[in-house]
Each structure stands twice: as structure tokens, then as C-alpha cells.
Image (tube, rainbow over all chains, first blue to last red; front, side):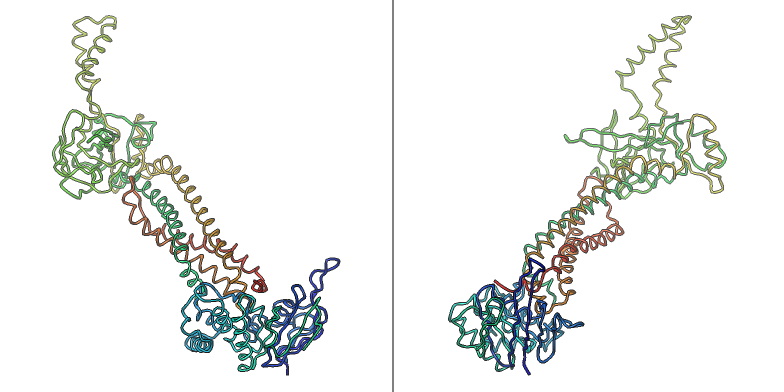
Amino acid sequence: MYAVEVENLTKVYGSGDSAVTALRDASMQVKPGELAAILGPSGSGKTTLLTAIGLINEPTRGRISLGGVCVANNGWQPGLDLKRLRREQLGFIFQAHNLIPFLTAIENVLVALNLNGITGKSARNRAEELLSALNLAERSQSYPANLSGGQAQRVAIARALANRPQVILADEPTAALDTENGLNVMALLKSLAQENNSAILVVTHDHRMIAGFDRVFEVSDGRIVREG
Amino acid sequence: MNLALRDIRHHGSRFLQTCIGLSLLLAVVMGMAGIYRGLVSEAMTILNDTGADFWVVQQGTNGPFAATSRMQEDLKYRLRTLPGIAQASPVSYQNIQMERHGKPFRFFLVGYEPGGMGGPSSVVSGRPIERLHYEMVADLSLGLPVGSRLELGRSEYTIVGLTRNMASSSGDPLVYVSLADAQEIQFKADNSALRTDRVRIARGLSAVDGLTIAQQQTIAPVVTTLAGGTHQINALVVRLKPSANPLLVQESIERWGHLRAISDSQQRAILFEGMIAKARKQIGLFSVILLIISAVIISLIIYTMTLDKLKVIATLKLIGAQNRVIVGLILQQSLIMGVVAYLAALVIINLTYQKFPRRVELVSGDLQALFLIVLCICVLASVAGIRKALSIEPAEALGG
């Protein structure tokens, strides 16, 4: 069973003469524990693909399955609680870490747990456990403004992992980091994918990071033109 | 985890500054309500303290507070003989402004018959007036201690007692003297004026045909005495016997033709409609404007705070936050701001209201109503911020 399965996914923005096809018949599969890259230049459709898999952007046509459950088939499946699915099954890592500036590092992890109904001591234990695993135990009470870029991105990773998601989606997670920190983050993601048996999809145009991926999907003009 | 409180904690100084600004506005609103209550209270002070059933005044007037009323003191004897009347006391009222220690010194002088109606119902220090002359009971707010002296007209008066919170409808503190003293202060002319009056009367009599010089000299002192008489009053306050029919008594008095009997409720209506209604509208309008300004400020601040958090809100939505979490974040901040500002306003007004030049009465009902209004304003003010927050797409969290 695939963690992520995409079949003939098409996304059209607008209609009539102003219609723009951002994604054309894209298909891909990612297994649990795999670290996959979605590579392509700006405007190629890679973020559209990521947001469709992330249940943010409704596809026009095609099918998406997460962990074997069909979530989209020519549009969202009726009766689907997209927010609940995002909370429980998906984790997000952003280009600029997107930590909540008024929460400390540990609170940023706790917020993801709390939103998923996990509160109290069990939530705190889980957050502390994640921060310790990412060597951030000593910075747990620091605000994002007082963290380095690498530390902030590791807190963001901890937040993404908090609810043990099946799939982690990362949008240019190394773009704001120097090469050393970028490589460290990629190594971390790879080890986390294997440890947690999560599929990790990373959108990037950073060719420096390609070496670490299990799979690479190259997107151009809305199509997956190469898979390796 | 309460996101609203954590955001406030993080932006503590900015939030506090906003709350202080807002609290000053709300303190003014509280003050306005207090001033209105004070106006009503001051306007009714004499009425409440006198406890009259009727105010008998000059016919065709709304006296003695809303219009000038002048009548002869001896009417009290006729009035006391009317069936149903238990007590009828003459009173005089006069605004006085003088200089004291180089500053304007203003008060409302009440003349009454010691032992009769119209005097202070209680003194908080010293004693009531016991002698017919040269004793005075003053309100505490004038700052005249018991035993001190005040020169007024051609005489000096000793403060023998003090009252608290006794003021006229225009807010001037009350000073009580005996009726005889009040009449002298109000009506007695000085020597120069008396001489001028005598000359004027003598000239007037000499112009009358048929009066001999001897007759003129005989009549002149009588006319001078009558013209210079001080036995005038502004009103007679009347208390009825328990068995009396107020309407019948009122009709009996007004049948005389030159007097008007104003019941206590009519007197209150005259004071309220004539002296308070406009002030109420003005204060009410001003308070509404201030509340609208408060609403606009809260709305702008909450909207700006929401704009500052667009990325945070998009991120929260992306990681699965329900709408109630987003609405709660904004609404709670608005309510916390309103409540903190309200409490600060309460502290400010409680520390300052006694320093206002006129009476400010803080009524708990008004303050509770304002609290509810502030909560409503906070809810309404957060609408724009909530709409903006709910319109944010989770995808906006992506990208740099």
C-alpha cells in the first residue's frame, strides 16, 4: 500500500479563455518511509501538486489516495473532513519555518497536538520527546525570534511530526538555510522518514539536496516529466 | 493552550498601551454617566431634603428654582389656616458669588425659619441654627470649618454646623441662614440706597396734586417703610396632614388668584424637563460618540492585530485548526482588551471622580450596563477581524 498515490491529477485555475492548467495528468506513488523530492523550476506546478496532496487545493480531475483511502476523485470526496485529515494524517514543513512567533518552541509543538485533541501531560511529554530527539531540549522555552534558522526549522519539523502523520509535506524546507544547515535538515528528514515510516514529500528546486532522496519526481509545465 | 492570551503576553506593552488609551475613553464615558447622575441628584437635593408636599409660589411662575417667585412672608399665616395643611414654612433662595482669599466663592443661600421646613435635615458636624441671627450652616464642600466666620452683606456670620452633599440644582453648595438674615442679605438696601429712595419718594409725593407739604411729610416715612420692606420670600413649603386631599388643598390655594401651588412631583418634573433633560441628551449623545470612538478603536486594533497574524492564521488553518480556534483567538483578544480597559477605567474613575468640580455619582447599574455595552462593542468590533481571518486560505502559509 502506498502512503501517497496520485493518478492523472489535473488542476485548472479559472475558466474559459482565462483558464490556466497548472497540473496535467500527474501520477506518482510514494511508499511509507520514503523520502521523495518534487523538483522543478518556479511555476512548474510542483507547489500545486503539493497543495493538492496536502488537501488544501482541490484538484479539478484525477484521484488522490492517502494510506489507501481515496480523498479526491475528480474533486474532494463528499463528506470528507479535510481539516481533521490534515491534523491527523499530514504534517507540514514550510520554507520559512512558519513558527508561531508568540509561542515558545515547545508551545509551537504543543499547538499541533492540542489542535488534534491531545492535551495535558501526554501532549507535553510528546513535545519534549520530539524536541529532545531534535537536540532542542535546551531551547524549548525560546521564542522563534531567538532561534537560529536551523533550530527554527527543526522546531517546525518537530511540530510536523507531533501527531505521527502518515505523510509529511515540505515546501522548500532548505531554501532559507545555508548549505550545511540544509544538508543537516535533509539528513534529519531522511532518518525521520525511516524511523517513523512516514512518507516525506519535499518540494525543492535546490539541486544541492538531490542526493539524499529515495525518489525524485521532476515537474515541468504541470507534468511529471521524469521519475527516478 | 490559549492562543489569545499568549499573543497578548508576547505583545504585552503594545496591548497595554492600547488598553490604557481605551480605558481613558471608557473612564470619560463613566464620568459622563456619573455627571448626569450627579446633575439629577443635585437638582433634587433640596426637594428631597425639604420633603414638601407643595411649593406655593407666585402665580404664573415655575418658581422658586426654575423661575423667580416673590411673595409676602405674611402669606404663611393665611396658608396655615387652610384645612388640610399641617405645616407651611417660608423660604428664600439666592445665588451668591463673592471673593474670598482672592478667588471666586460661590454658593446658594437658603433662608428658612429655624424649626420650620426648608432647613438642612441633618448636620454632619456642629449643630443646626438655633439663634435668629448671624448663624450659618454650610456644606462641607465649601471648606468652611465650624466656628469660622463669613462676612456677607453688612454682617458677619458664624458657621455653626456643616452638611454633606447639599447643593443647588446648578451645583452650588448650600449655605443655610435664618429667614430673617436671608431677607436682610437679599432685600435690605444700604444707607446710600436708602437715602436715594427717600429723595425719590419725596419727589414723587410732591408731584401729587392736592397733597400739602405736611401731608407729604406724614406719608413719606410710611411709603419708605413699605417700599423698603424686607419681609419677602420666594416660596412657602407646605406639608399636608395625612388625611388631606392634595387636589382640594391645591385648588383652595390657587383660588386666591395670586398664588400657584406646585406639587412635589410637578416641581420634580419642572426641574427635570427644564434643567436636566437637555443636559441628559447632551451627555447621552457625547457618551454615544465616545462609545462609537471606542468601538472604532477596538475594531481597528483588532483588525490590525489580525493583519499582523495573517501568516500565523494561515499556518494554523493549514495544520488543521478549526474555525472556532481562529474565531476564538480574535474574539478573545477583543474581549480581553475590552475587559482590561473597562477595569482600568473603573480604577481611574474611582480615583478621580471626587476631584470633579461638580458631583459625579457612580451608579453600579450604569457601570454594569456599560460593561455589557463594552462586551457588545468588543464582539462587534471583532467582526471585521474575524471575517478577514476566515477568508485567509491555508495555502497562504506556503512560500516565503
